[in-house]
Image (cartoon, rainbow, N blue to C red; front, side, top):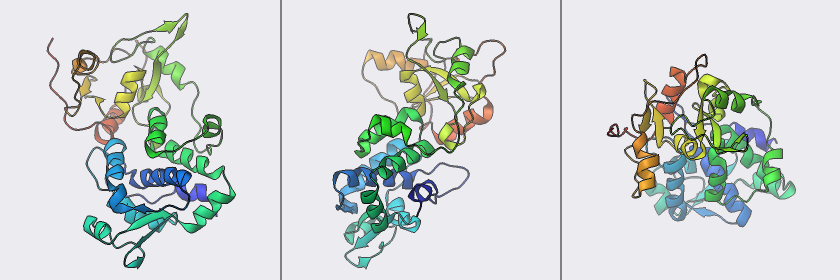
Length: 297
C-alpha cells in the first residue's frame, strides 16, 4: 500500500474552490502525537480545543469545526474512530463526539507501516506540508503539532510532484528592485540581499505558478503576515490590513497598521504586476476578515 499516495489524495470538501485543509491538519496533528506516543488515542473532547486553534490559524478564513475531519478522515483509510458505542464514528455533531467518548488514532495498518519504515513519517509530513501550506508556515506548523523532523531528512525525503522553478526568487526580487513591496526594506549583507523573500500570492502548494505576476518581493516579516492573512492586496494593488489584527506597541502600528492603503512598491518598468486572478485568490482564500480603514497620512 502506498501511504504517501493515500495521504496526498485525501478527499476534501470543495465548494467554489475554497481551500479546505481540515483533514491534512488533523493528519499532521495525529502524526505528531504518534511520534510522542505510538499507542496513544486522541479523545475528541480533550483535543477539540487544540484542533480548533489549528483550523483557526491555518484553515480557511471562515470558521469551521474540527468535528468534520475527525469523523470524515476515516473514509481515507488512514484514521480510525471508536466511541463508547463501539467501533466507528458516532457522527459529525459536536455533541455526538463529545458525549460518546469518541477517540481517534492512525489506522492500524498505517501504524504498522510507520513502525516498519521510520522514514515514512517525515515523508508523509513533508508531503502534507508541501501540498497544502506555504513554506513560510512549515516550521511553525511542525512546532504547533509537535512534529520533530530532522532538518536534512525533512527536505530530502519530500516526494517530487511539481518541480519548482529555481529562478523564481531571483526574478521576483529583481522585478521589485530588491526591496520589500510593502515597507521598502532593502537590506544587504555586503552585496547579498538579506531578509528578502519571493512570496507566492497564490500559494505554490495550491497550484500557484512560479511567475513574476504571481509573486511579491517581501521582507521576512511581511511575507509571514501575508501568508497568514494579516495583509492582502486590493484591486488597485494597495495594501490591505485585516481588522482582526491587533498590536499594542509602536512596532505593530508602524510595521503593520500603518501599511493600510499604501500602494505596492514596484514592480520596475517592464515587469508584470500581480495578476488580478492571483490577487483575487488570496483575497478569498487567505486574507482574514474585512480590511481596516486606510491609515491617516
